[in-house]
Image 1: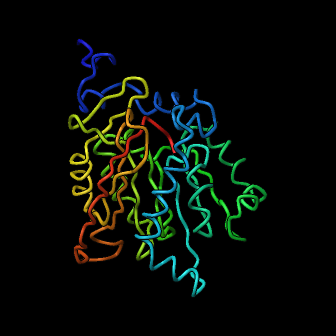
Image 2: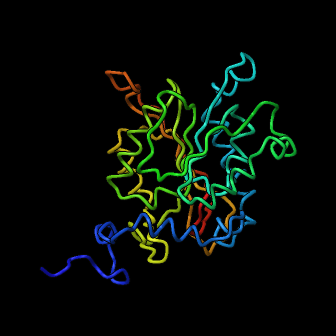
Image 3: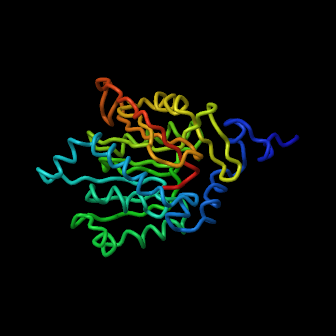
Length: 279
């Protein structure tokens, strides 16, 4: 029987991309070949890291206002999971400044080793992270394979990695995240966004950049409420737009009825953009 798998250079649709043999492994191999630095994981645009973290911090502080206030005034301990963490950039610049413990998940072993070196207690102290805040677990595994620790995370941060997952695996992942969340925990997704069409295929790193409408369809299928849907500001105009989403499960782990629908925030008027990046 003739092989029905499409030639990689002929891939034009999501369905054809999903059929590429060993696609997940090829994506990991792509990142294995990149320099384990901010510039390497940001596709040569390391200078956008501070801008990226600025807007991410604004969203985090707004969406998690209650738990963060409880941590400061009542001693509540907060834990986050950094998914597709690369060299630990988001943990280092953002999450460890607000969460007592952060777990790091990255399928590229050489990027994960760099993350471990970047997130030592000595380096976190030099970065003026609060005393006692620490990176705890380092998982070298793909998102589609990860098994979540039940009710551990107040925040699951997923940045620049859903574009490597099939639609089915993306929806499955988001549903699996629910078991890993605390009762008021949230999922944050930050991704490149296609503006000219519903999707864009990248043959080099085997990724699929989806439109905002495409992303919202997947969130709906995963039974997620979109609390915030914001454009990243200030990135170079020649690159992909980037959007940030704060998601709350309609049904929490152990619940039997949907939670009330929140009002979705409007996006800022200024547009931003980005290239293919890891976190």
